[in-house]
Length: 319
Ligand code: SF4
Ligand code: SF4
Image (cartoon, rainbow, N blue to C red; front, side, top):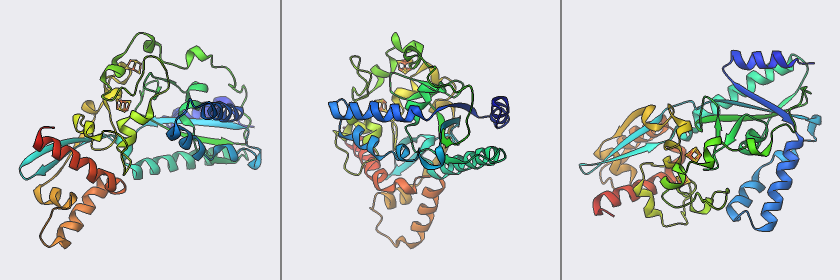
């Protein structure tokens, strides 16, 4: 049987923040979300996110009884990406979590490390497919902010959270120790910074649940953005939105401005990206695609082109 202090020491040596609890929390999550979905408290977007989690079906496999959550810092910096549109500079930001390849690599490493560690005691481990934020708050790994993100001590909302289920029985099992008044950051009862900074009023004073249908971050990743997307040009991101995170006092030291790397695309490269390059594209295609891949944007290209056009249009027309 694995001893708790050995697990905690293992996490400490790897610079991981760790929390664990009974898989009963997943059942609770399912019931809670199902109720919200049935009652209409969840809108279509939230219901479809909830229905896409596969975690609830994994529990019976190999008698998985324990959830383990591990938080680390995001693998990269926020990237400042400057485009040149016929001499006009378009400055944009890409939050670090959009480097899916790096994020995936890092989550696979954590998975491998944990599996190796627990297999020495004869236990199996599987990746958990959400809901990380809910579980992080319930298992004491972090706390919700008013912006519905989870903040981990020492990492803010810029934490990367990986979840696992295992048949290792960990005692004392923390389930159900966290009181509901400890689920939300203390300052949120008096602070309204994120709410005031949100350009689309997605954060509401009268309800805790985010109006995800108004959230620019969500819509910035959709091919058919369903809101007045011109608002997107009023903020700095090329994808995602950092307004409610960068203004939060719990993110001091982690904000975009404090951890930034610079990438630029010249006039030809920018015009290729937005589909306006009229010369032989063979050479530039290779260069730009490689560059997009390096900064982790290849997978996001479909909506990034749309978002860039919105920024360019706004800069040129002033709207
Ligand atoms: S990500 Fe942007 S749009 Fe969404 S809640 Fe935060 S500030 Fe508002
Ligand atoms: S900005 Fe203020 S209200 Fe918003 S999550 Fe941070 S502490 Fe809470």
